Amino acid sequence: MTIGAGTAAGSGRTALVVGATGISGSALVDTLVDDGWSVLALSRRPGPQRAGVTWLSADLTSASALAAVLAPENPSHVFFTAWSRQATEEENIAVNAGMVRDLLAALRGKDVSHVALMTGLKHYLGPFEAYAAGEMPDTPFHEEEPRLPVNNFYYAQEDQLWAAAEEQGFTWSVHRAHTVIGHAVGNAMNMGLTLAAQATLCRDSGQPFVFPGSETQWNGLTDMTDAGLLAEHMLWASTTPEAANEAFNIVNGDVFRWRWMWPKLAAYFGLEWEGYQAEPRTLEQSMAGREDQWRELAERHNLTEPDLDRVASWWHTDGALGRNIEVVTDMGKSRDAGFTGYRRTLDAFTALFDRYRADRLIP
Ligand SMILES: NC(=O)c1ccc[n+]([C@@H]2O[C@H](COP(=O)([O-])OP(=O)(O)OC[C@H]3O[C@@H](n4cnc5c(N)ncnc54)[C@H](OP(=O)(O)O)[C@@H]3O)[C@@H](O)[C@H]2O)c1
Image 1 (cartoon, protein in one colour):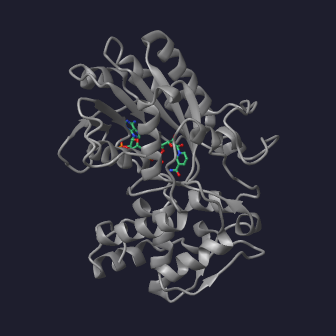
Image 2 (image 1 turned 120 degrees about the vertical axis):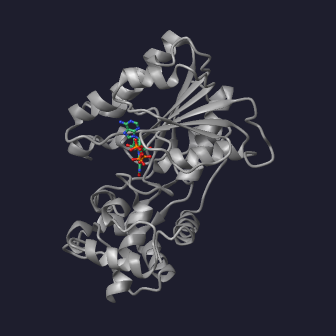
C-alpha cells in the first residue's frame, strides 16, 4: 500500500471521522492526517489537538445537535466508527442504527462521495446476547455468508447505510473487524490495554500472567485486527473504485494460537505465565477489587490514568478469550480487490505496549 506521510494523497479531501476518540476512530484520524487529509473529528469529548484536525462535539443520539454541528461542514468522505453499548440487542439496534441514520440525514445535500462503516465479526457470530448460539457459518468467515436469523445492530446499521446511499447517491463500504487492538483509553472494548493492565497488576503483586480463557481459544487458531491496519483498509476502500459498495473482512493477515502468543506477551512484561485452566480464571474474577492497587501504582509510576475502569475492559477480553468456538477470518476478498496490507499480530501487540509505555499508560 502507498499510504503514508509524504504522499499527500488525501490533499483536498475532507474526512468526517465519527467516533474519533475511539480505538478505531483515533487510528483513522492519525492515518488520514498522515496521508494529507483534512479531518473533522466527531465525538462528545474532544481528543488530542493535532494540525489538520478540527474537533466537533455532538451527541450522536441527538439529530438536532448533529444537524447544528454539521451545518457549516462539507466532508467528502465519512468514516463511521462510533458505538454506544446498550443492555439488550433491541436497544443496541435502536441506538446504534439510529446514530447512523441521523448522522447521514444531517449530511443530506452535501458533497459526500463515500461512507465507510465499521462493524465486526459479530456479523457472523451473532450479538453478545446470542453470541455463537445456534447455527453459525463455517470458519474461516467469508463475506458472502447470509445474515444469521437473529436481530443484530450491525445489520440494522448496514440497512441504514444502504438506504441513505441509495437516496443520497454516495458509495459505501462495510469493514468487519475481529478483536481490535489499538491506542485509546476509556473505551468499552480494548484487549491490548486490558492485557497490559493485567500484566502490570500481576507484576506489581508478584503473580504469574494467567490465561483467562477457554481451552478452545488456548489451542485453536485465531486472528486479530490492528487498529492502524483497519484505518488503512477503510482509507483504501473509500478511495478505490473497485472496492465501492462492498462489505469486507479486515484482520491482520496472520493466524496464531494463544498457547504460542501468551508466553511471548508474558516475556515482554518479564512475567511467569500459566496457560489454560480446566476451570478458567476469568479476569472479572481475578482482577476484581484492584482499583486501589492501580491508583497507587499510577501514582508511584506517574501514570496518566489512575482509574482502572478506564484502562481495562475485563468483560470484553474474558468474552473474546473464553469463546468455545474457533474464530478465523478470510481476507481473500480484500486481496482480490487490491488491499495487500498486513500486520504480524505479535509485532502489533509489542508496538502497542511500547506506545502505552511512552505515553505513561503503563510503567
Ligand atoms: N473494539 C473492538 O475490539 C471491536 C472489534 C470488532 C468490532 N468492533 C466494532 O467497531 C465499532 C467501533 O467500536 P470501537 O471499539 O472502535 O469504539 P470505541 O473505542 O468504544 O469508541 C467509540 C467512539 O464513539 C464515540 N461515541 C460513543 N457514543 C457517542 C455519542 N452518543 N455521541 C457521539 N459520539 C459517541 C466515543 O466518544 P465519546 O464517548 O467521547 O462520545 C468514541 O469516540 C463498534 O460497532 C464495535 O462493535 C469493535
